[in-house]
Length: 137
Image 1 (cartoon, rainbow, N blue to C red):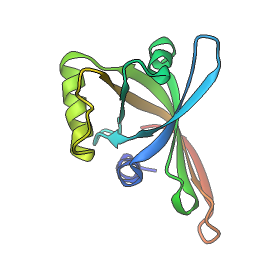
Image 2 (image 1 turned 135 degrees about the vertical axis):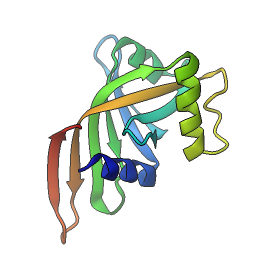
Image 3 (image 1 turned 90 degrees about the vertical axis):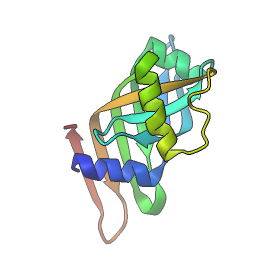
């Protein structure tokens, strides 16, 4: 999967599940809206006091599952960071461009950037079944 194909897939899917772990290693998963930059950085927003935010701040490795319609999905592992200052504003605007009307830049929300490091493309459709795993660009 090329970077451009990844970006197009995430923009089309628009939602995914982010998986994090807490300080005791317990898993947590949450459905989130996902935006993506042209450079393939995945962005989501969350209330600052959400469990996933505590988890990301303590353990920045996350996993995402993106898409599931028609038997096609992406599994992504990467490093996440909670943005602040000018980065928060910049990535928040990218998020808002893909989710107009969202409250991502309101003070009670955080903006998270995930830099993919590994992905698995899974196509379970009978006519085109295929699984591809790769380190990211």
